[in-house]
Amino acid sequence: MNQEDMWTTRYRDAGEHYLFGIEPNRFLAHRAALLESGRRALAVADGEGRNSVWLAEQGLDVTAVEISSVAVDKARRLAAGREAQVRFIEADMLAVDWPPAHFDQAFDWVIGIFIQFVGAEDRSRQFATMKRLTRSGGRILLQGYTPKQLDYRTGGPSSLENLYTQDTLRAAFADWEIEELVEYEDEIAEGSGHHGRSALIGLVARKP
Image 1 (tube, one colour):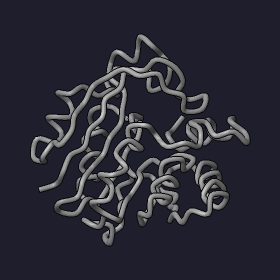
Image 2 (tube, helix red, strand yellow):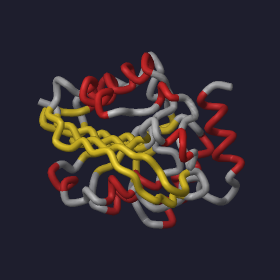
Image 3 (tube, helix red, strand yellow):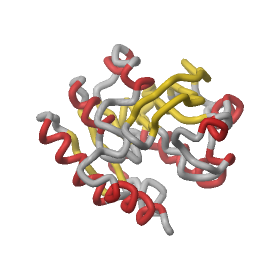
């Protein structure tokens, strides 16, 4: 099953519920003050819209990209219900023809929350795309799981190579200024998809 079919099935099976809830990711939300340093944000693999809608509620100009049409429809309903303005795009961030040229270096913030659906090779392409989208002086914010998450099994991928370590992220952003890189554990409750004790890692990196 390809990524589009897999995620569409998961979001459709959630019915009227939101698979990962409707509240923003906590790592992202706790950095609300930092977000004031730039006004144009892109949320990649945004799912059902919980993070992009929240970003719009903070006053940012937000674009959200998601591969699943079911998720995009649900995200639009969430935005409409909360009167939030988000530009939703149905697209595969790993497609050879994405992103469009006018997205190059267009965003102050590029945000990836639990986008660990690829292994090492595709992750290099994923991060390269996110870097390309970020303007000089802009930032990438990531939240992900560490390998210890395989012990908890409270969300996230089942493949070890999809998970982040500090060394992985330091190497990936060696040419950027890493402003924050923190590994920690927390109890999270993000719908039925992420629930319980979790092994987490967060990154904020600034483009030179």
